[in-house]
Image (tube, rainbow, N blue to C red):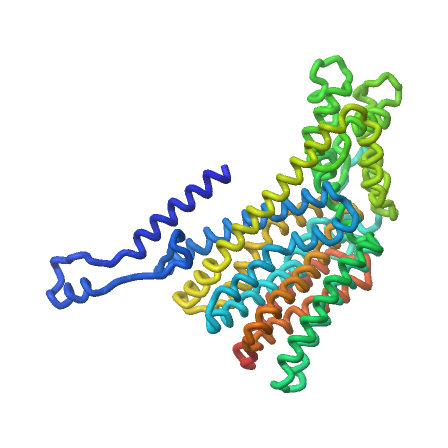
Amino acid sequence: MTRASILLFFLLLSIINSSSSRSIRENLGIVSNVDELKLFASTVTCEPTYGFLPCTSVLWGQLFLILVYEFLLSLGDKYVGAGSDLFFDMIGPGIFGASLFHILGSIPVAVFMLVSGLSASTETAEEQAVMSMALLAGSAVMFLTLIWGTCVAIGSKDLSNTPPSPDTETKTPFSFTGLGVSTDVETSYTARIMILSMVPFIILQLPKILNSTTGTRVAILVSLVVTVVFLFSYLFYQIFEPWIQNRRFEYLLQKYVKDKLLGLLSRNGHPNITFMKELFHELDKDKNGYISQAELRGLILGSQLKEICLDRNTLVDTVISAFDTSNDAQIGEAEFVKGLLKYVFDAHQSSSTQDQGHFKFFSSNVKKNVEEQQSLLAKRKGSRGQRVDKSWWNYLKAGFLLVLGTAITVLLTQPLIKTVSEFATSANISSFYVSYVVIPLAFNYRQAVATITNSTQKTKKAISLTLSEIYGAVFMNNVMGLIMFLILVYIRNLPWDVSAEVLVVLIICLVMGVFTSVRTSFPLWTSLVAYLLYPISLLLLYVLTTVLGWS
């Protein structure tokens, strides 16, 4: 389906190219000879970034090209994300898990900024550098306002911590103060780490505050050095204190396991016993009133646990032992429903504890996940070769996805920036506002959807991991994006003209960072505040750039 869509898009692009690049030489019999000569002499041409890509000088054609490029770039981002997730699934927490995953996840933005500045003239590079900073600012602000607010709104539940009853499905009355989300203390620590990424932004604002033009280049160099130090310190910190990457690993486990099972077994945070019984009868293929090990293995394979590093045969035995209270190596309907109810309640109980694993019969300690996997593999006789082959296949698959996604990003970044600039000129609007909203949305919508979807589980652990993922993404976005941007500005000696964007990122990140680092409970009304911060940030940019004339 994806391949067919891409082919269709390129077919349409070729049509636009052929229709927009040719000379207009139509002979109209109803016009005068003078007008006819003018028409013969007129041409509508454009210069494509690459020979095989289309271009157009028509407003609607430019808009269509932007949409196509954004779609293809989102595919590239999807491939990079899938490849980096697969690498982290196989490697798990550790030295490589700490550094490799975060750098791989930031490749699209880094490539976006590097390509946009290194392959253009000085004048064009200045314009593209501003747009690159707009991407950095737009992504950070979007995650901390729209996406954060949506996660809180969707993940809200009764803050009274009353456990749900398996026999009732009562709805909590709507309340801006009674509904909300709660997080663990580690989430607050992640928010504080995000605040540290603001130090280079503060350094960059010093020449503006001191009204010094000579100190700008020094501030850029100092900020670049500090940002690089922060990046490596963050990575090394995870090696010796791996709680951050452990939470990331748990987030991936939750995405692949809990989204597939707990999301099907609970409705609005309450057990759905009727559906549990229906699921039991669907799994009971031979209709003998029991679920065998083979039938249970089908459930696990169907839930896509094969995509993560878990031993499925051992997992089947573990689930059988947890469900099979009669010790007859098979599960009856009552045992199945009782076991699932216990699983659902264990997940809810984990929201009020510091237990690192809410999958009671899947994993008891995420910090020991890698060692447990190695132990499980050692116990499986005769299957070593098969696991190694699959591991190497997964490494090849992850590498291919990363190369493909990065290639798409490198290839289409420059054409997208050029098309956005041309579209903004044709439409008589500021190119910054186009890039501030449209491009960040195109780059981040897939991660945004996955993050928001994960918050629907309405548990403390789920929302904690989700918000931690947001804070970690903002940190890496700020650090990696700023490093690439400052390298371009310093090496090419570009003028510094993004003070407004830097200030907006500084304000939004500090406000949300301080607010989320000092509390662990967020009522529903806080999501409205986060939503309001997004248009406020746009208004602030308008005032700084248009009214006050900041550059």
